[in-house]
Image (cartoon, rainbow over all chains, first blue to last red; front, side):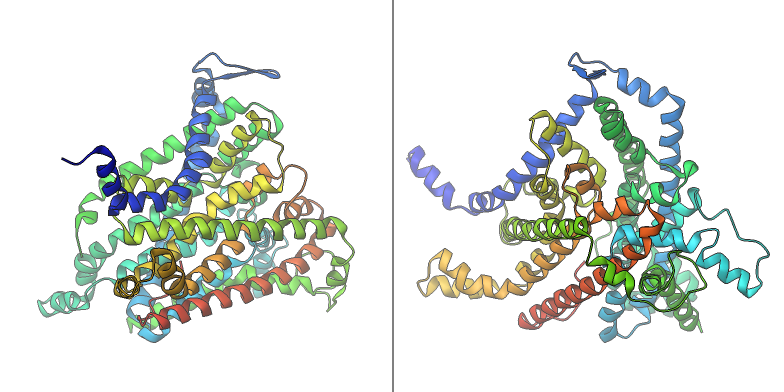
Length: 296
Length: 268
């Protein structure tokens, strides 16, 4: 019969133990710097701010404020609408590009195309957003260009300092994050399946609709989630190009934390936003469950 | 033909992707304080002005220090996690890796806010090193994604051969594994460095009164007369990050060649 020490010794050399030992530094770091702080934010959101001191009795008052006060409701709804719009626009624009690179570009040039697509996104995010302001402004590049071409008589004003500007800018900012997962899933599709579809008498469109698209759905779903979830927390874009009607919840969270010094309410707003995004994401995953089960 | 229509769309899309980036050098060399067309003539004075701004130099140094520390720490943590996840099955693997990779999908403002409240609660002064704490959290998942590919491509029989020939686990790692994944490590260092250098939100919340470069830029965007100088700075940063990026791509390709695989796209 093996003693406990012997058993422990054997376990220590086992694969599981070696894996756990190896993974423990990054795991401890994430637990200390992410899981712990997140748990504290949850606790904080149930406390209340009373001028300079924090009342530590648990209460729901922050959540009641966050979910009933018109200002926060408007911001929350707008953030959600903008995020959905950004996701739709980004993924719809990205799909044809991913499709083109995967199906029409010669294999040895694919890496070059992907490189070309990712390059603009390694320049300063702040400056990219600011430059959209330059492009979309009243005297901006787009308006001067269109005026010069005689396509419009007066500058377009609906493209800066509102939600449209936020959607355009974010659709640009998230482009590679949508293109890459779709591209990867398109690359995995066995091309002989498409030939089979056509041999069996389906047209191009029908083959695309019934074979390519369902098989590409895991990539599309990943793209949607990668774009949708972080978009709701974007601060820079609404602050720079959104104007008063394009402000989003992150701008309010920043104000609560750094200007109004009401951290508990800020925490409740952050968690409410996360809750909304999380629920929408789960519903979306549920609706697409049949595509995700397919093993390729 | 269908392919040609898609090609036209692809070119149009690339124009959309590159439009803001191409404007940057245009306005950096434009001889006017107003950022608008028509251009007013060529000048390099905005670049000359950059040399005289002390606050900017401090911000650059601060950012560089943060980015270098972040790159090293995130890559070290990434090596541990990627090695563990590529090579071993262990209890709770999915949950543990999920937590470590979580910052990839979490809005950055949530990461920033949660670290901020804990630091303030503990009474810790904000500064460069609190930004590093946040950036390491953010960069580690990217490092893991890159390193995972490197470790997965590794032929296990080489390590087994080394162990059979009498090397210890550690010397095998140092002599066989590490050199083979080195291109992955370099590309992970460069990507983490670039992400940290450009990161704004976490730095904005955690930097206290030593601004990083993006936080400094943010404060300057409010002053219209400072914009051309910001454009000049942006142009320099653009050139530098293109250099770094090409270096990362080169080292990744060399890694792919070394392990004898087929090239399958970028490092994201």
